[in-house]
Image (cartoon, rainbow, N blue to C red; front, side, top):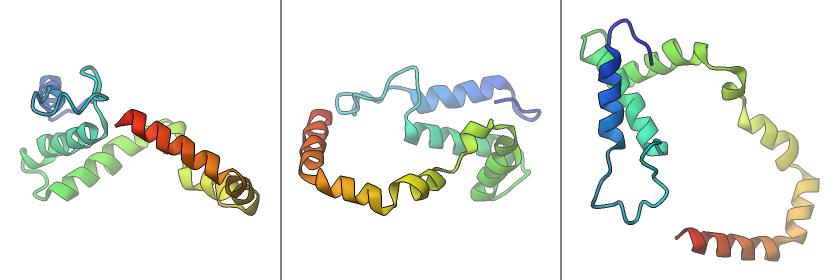
Length: 123
């Protein structure tokens, strides 16, 4: 992230703190790769960056307002179109229709068996 108010090194520190290995949960957190942020880490970085950019500099006092400003005011306008696609539009057009329901219902037992096996493998 680029900011006129915050040095790049501050964002690197936020990333490093959030992405640090937690030895107490590392054994059960097998999908949390060290080079990448998982979903909750990504969200934590967003909140911490909003605090660093706006709250700590006295520009915005409320953390939720700071997060909103960071996301809407800074990030949304710079995202490519693919990142702003509407997932619900796809679901409404292709998933939540009678033809899809008929096919899913016809194969429900197989789909449930696959789900159970995949879920058990992940746990």
